[in-house]
Image (cartoon, rainbow, N blue to C red; front, side, top):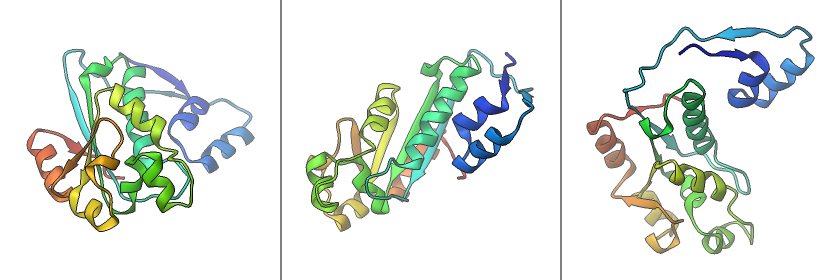
Amino acid sequence: MKTVLSFAAASLAFASPSAVLAQEEQTEEVVVTSDMEFPGDATWMHSFDAYESEAGKPNGAFRRALSFIRAMEAEGVDPGRVKVAIVVHGPAVFDVVNDGRYGEKYEGETNQAYNDIAQLIAYGAEIWVCGVAAKYHGVGNAHLLDGVKMAPSGTAAHAELQRRGFGINPY
């Protein structure tokens, strides 16, 4: 199935804020037509790595994972055939914890990644936390949001996902 996307729609879905601003300045619409076809009976298994984190802001890795699912759906792929996994480590472990633990770390703030996590879980995404990073940051299983799981390490989680056929997003 081929889909025609306007540059403005693509910018909003996938681009950085500066690219969206550049699009707003453009007066002529640019049409982008995908030549890639996606078989209806195929399954896509893609993983993302979440390390970067900023207090009080949604995590970019979760947004990229959601964008991937939605982009595939826009191409006519059944979202049930898109399998997404995210390996969370480093300071990003706080992006998958309940508000109580998040508030302890970030002076009473609430976890802004909650809605993204809930949407990903609803799509069937696997979210794995690096146990080494969790222990280092004082995050236990009881602190994790519903549906988020603990792995022995981020490296082990990535290795297991690749063994099962997941590719890894390079950015």
